[in-house]
Amino acid sequence: MYRIGEAAQRVGVSPSALRLWERQGLVRPQRTRSRYRVYDDADVDHLRQVRRLREVDRLNAAGIRRLLRDPAAAGPHGDRGLDGRLLRRLRVDRGLSLREASERAGLSVSFVSALERGVSGASVATLQRLTAAYGTTMLELFGGARDASANRRLVRANERQVLRMGAAEVRIEQLAHGARQLEPHLFVLAPGASSDGAYAHDGEEFLYLLSGAVTVWIGSEETYVLDRAGDALTFPSTLPHRWRNDASGESRLLWINTPPTF
Image (cartoon, rainbow, N blue to C red; front, side, top):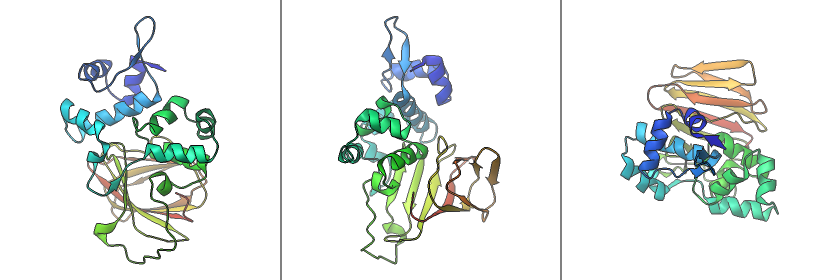
């Protein structure tokens, strides 16, 4: 649990901004017996969404409240958001309690519960932790199980399956159906978007910058800045890695994982 100053620092705003958002009905923090405001991990993630909607999408308080009530409005028709009901079914099917799932993923019980209830979004790093905990893939977490039997070789630009996180801060477009040895995606990152933590998994990764500027940290000593269209980076997925869009506008990346472990 975080006091208002700690929560504000994690979100990147002032404590007075959190008080204003509370008055506007954008957040409802818990209170201690002494009436101090306290925020958990789910609250912090929710506040980051509010900040993104204010600063990037330029929405007013009424627009943010409407969008948070209807997350499907965050992206174009056909986009998939994280389905909390699917997360709960995956956990239950594996015979895991909320506490067991949270311990496996290294997340708080309240945060996993908030994800399942659909009242909080999740970062790429968070979903990778759940992927490992449930023995599944990112695509399946978004409700789009890989159909290897379909063998659709051609994917039209207007037929891509789109996964989005938060308030469309990160958009992932699937570039192949039924591929067995690789997993190609188009990452579209809003200004300041990040993985919000490091993650690792099996395989190798290839990144090709189409536009913008992205910084990638690999392990504890390697830092790479991709800031020219055509810059490329390859590394083992088993090394903890994190990333951030450092461009003033949108960044776009061709991102390939092999084998399909994302």
